[in-house]
Image 1 (cartoon, one colour):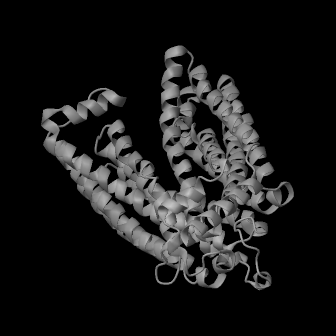
Image 2 (cartoon, helix red, strand yellow):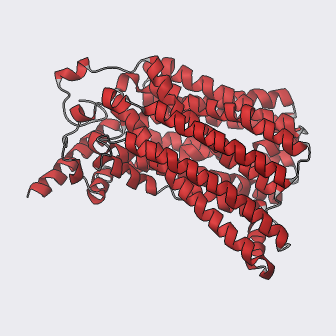
Image 3 (cartoon, helix red, strand yellow):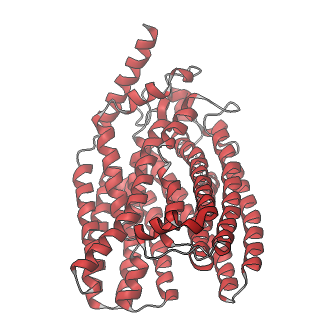
Length: 493
């Protein structure tokens, strides 16, 4: 029995085309485009709003975070791609439409950002304090009426941007299920997700740094606005092109959906309510969903504090702390590729994920200990090791995640797993900062304050390991198959 479907595969399945390395690299172009977009939206625009437009960091965080918290729509988009083909394909049409919408909303977000900045100046709207106090100050000042309207509008645009990303990324992950088999899925994940990080690196070097030089040289807002608008127009066109090239012809040529599904030409029988019945039929769904949340918290809680850790505890410059991202990214890419090709084939997916989680827990303790040492090289080496451990964990967990699907409702399951990860990313960012604030109230030493974040991160990952031991792929498959059969039988009755 196939791990990603329910029906026995016909003999013709063995002759179906298998993805070769050039095709896998082509698929990875889509993830690369998402990496580029993350640098433009969550990196570059974040920097400009806070530093150049003087928008309160808490207001900016509120605006940007909304793209994470529209993640429940991923389940719906996944179910749509399962049940409503577009142009004769379950996944490709959604990915292409999403690419155009992502570009459109990203460009609108840039224009909304400029309008918000201009209104802040025109109304002399400034905020006092930090955190929740800054948010309250902004939303209740009488002289900030137009600025508030633009902030709310910009928040709405970022919500639409998050929905557009979900509308493409969820069907894309489901496409990876459709075109792969258990024995080559880890290699596919290792390459495709490492290209996401490559997109971040490429965008950082070729886009963000030249613009940062322009900022450093003291360009006025009008000059900066023109440069960024032009950059976005070019890059968004490239992102659309990458999305089209990445997936063109892939589903038609490589998809195993028709040989795995019990509902070929009857996909519309799987409504959202029925998909939900299948999704929740097994206790394994809840177990894995919770594991993904804890694992993601354990991976990303330090995101919001790592650069500040380098600056405050180690006395590193801004350039030096920014370089920590390079150590982390290099380690992650190496970890993903090595895991996909060498570790998963030997240890299998669940054991690989467990190994990665344990390594992450160990390395976070090294972060804690490095704070008392004060050695910059030790911090850089630890960041590299953390990236390596993250790559192992991510590849193992994603490969396992793609196995925990049903052929008929793959998009729905992928949407649920994506929901867990998106929520956890948002929670991790908030939690990291909140725990650091708590640490600063409890301890006089910065090393202890940051150490509290790393200690809680390690404990969270160990709890995730304990939960992973209870995940049973075979039980999941059996229960989901029974649920699907019951749904279909009820329809016949």
